[in-house]
Length: 234
Image: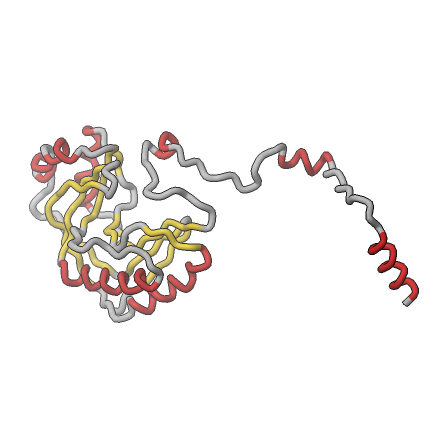
């Protein structure tokens, strides 16, 4: 007890200012004045000129749900002919079923579980890819060429289930009158009028018997650098 009392007494009676120990030189050199978690580069020049829809903040994950598209002859035919127009080819085309929303990191697992639960009633289905169309993103910084997708009823059913989850997290729902589509190429800026002039010539490249059917066995969710798969009921 005497030792404990002495320690307490010496601590309480010392009024001298505290002096921080210097950081060892070997440790200081590891950081060299740099941030350990530097802020990601938002310069459009580093992303093929693309601009973020929202500012990147640590702990916020860009998230969206979509129908993945496997390799299709229909898509390959058009993409091969689009390179001469200077468009950027989309390597992994998909059909979006939500907007791109911001999800907090600590919400992710619960969000994924909620989506899985809501999609349980959805049966596997087939999407038909229709005519080529031109689409612009929300802030008109990019223009896309893609195939419109049908049938609307089943795609809207998927969106309704996903919207109910988004509402629980106070996240924006999908568009009120959605135009479902499979984007296959893009360019910077609003080039809608120019790209519409080449659609007919592109359609002529497609053989009459080329399949336009896409079998949907699962949906996917991409959040940050992670992907989650949701198998649909047979």
